[in-house]
Image 1: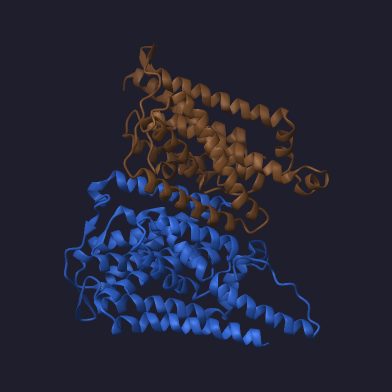
Image 2: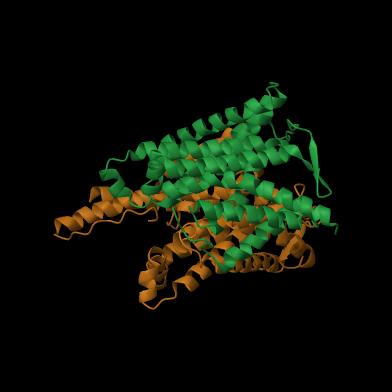
Length: 288
Length: 338
């Protein structure tokens, strides 16, 4: 096996790991704050990607305008889900949230199927250049995508650390009743969490389109890696999720030096499933 | 007390109608309706399997379609290698699904909170990905065909496909499972399963191995789904990877939820009610899953006890009020599972 190919796949792994981090971020945020497992999260990612593909291929809109567009659209969609569903299941049996969001997943996927059809859409990257280093040629767009993902992660981390709402978002899950009596506007905090979750996953969807294309079932294919990352990272633990996402990307990258893309995905998921067998409740422990 | 009687009578009536419909309908209807009922029987197996797993192993499973598909896929080679024996085919398929369930459950029961549910989504995605990646074995989307025309059963040859004898061979075990569960509801062993389902710690303190019981219940629920899969393959003479999709599991979940989770007859009532409705709608709308999704969301938000669950609640509440008047006070537990 040539070393440069391994290096290429490893860099690919890190790039995918970073994108996966911002996909999983929203799942983690909503679980951490509201205790809801949003099974429709993959569908939100798919909506972000399909909007990008549709706007670029059919409407001829420039890629860089699409990023904010997808981000805002999916954020608004998630806000709507928050009002219609999340708020109604907050204090109830967790199974209700799972079942309700399973319904949403089926609905969103098939609404998109009915509008956009079942053909996979591909989008040409906005930047074609490749750069050469250490003997390999790497597409510049993927490096930009990784940079945007990193920036988004940093942005969310700063938001959680330094803003009033960020503080509340960390405080509410620790002591919900105390938060309520001290006057924290919990409903608004929930809404902001949902919007933030939607915005990041929408951005991820749009950003992934030039790399992976768009298809109405792409949410389903990402939800497994997303879930495994969040569970092994320790449900609701953001740092843990990011670390595991990058590790997942690397593992997948290593496998893809020897296997086809589908089989490397299967192998990477199975590897992490083995980790889950040994540490059924994650390796980083739960933290809000 | 009148409410009590009214709700209980209605629940019993639905029970009787559902079982009667299953047993009589194919005799008095056309080939098309027999095929239609056959599909409902097959779906009821997954719904019953899912409900067992959720209500008594406390695992909300999104992977029962996988166990269903294991049963269906196994039926194909089993039919060609054991064409003399239908029982060998169905029992073999059910046993293999059960073993698969046992393996999966050995991981799931060690997890806390919602992690088992998430694991079922992950495993189900891995299996579907892998199955689609090896079309030479699974046939991919095109699937595999059963070429045999008949299969031996108790000295007779039974036609493969949606035939009347095969229908009854498929429907009878389902009815037995449902009736058996109804009969068992008051038995001590079942009380124990329910106690374990409701509270691990309590059961453990009483000296019962909660994990082992959850493991066994999950394996049985997988075997039931696999049994349905075997009958599906025999009826359709075909099985493909689309039978593994999570949307099939969600369909089964919807049936169980609408009928009433944790009730013996609920999943069957759910199938008999919702399956025909979606079939009729599919004549007018291509994308029926949109509607299934919306119904599942609305039902889980506003009607999570389901039909039988609600009736039992009304009946229990009336009973409770009667008891309260006698001076007995005991607040009913607010739970999704009856």
